[in-house]
Image (cartoon, rainbow, N blue to C red; front, side):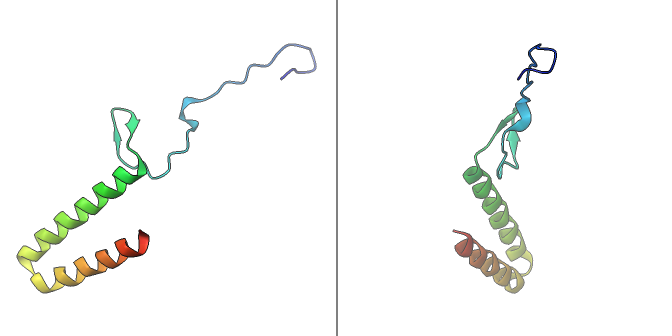
Length: 75
């Protein structure tokens, strides 16, 4: 681009203008892809439901099926 004086304007590109998508988890500045993030979230959900099943089996059974219904709806 050139302004009214004829001098050339330098457009500074920022490095952090990438579209981040679903990259919630970042590792060493590099972002994990969205699919890996979804897998990590599902893994956390499964671990939580296993811990819940140790304490209250009936409630965690309902929660687990609730999350499975969400997962089948998303995918």
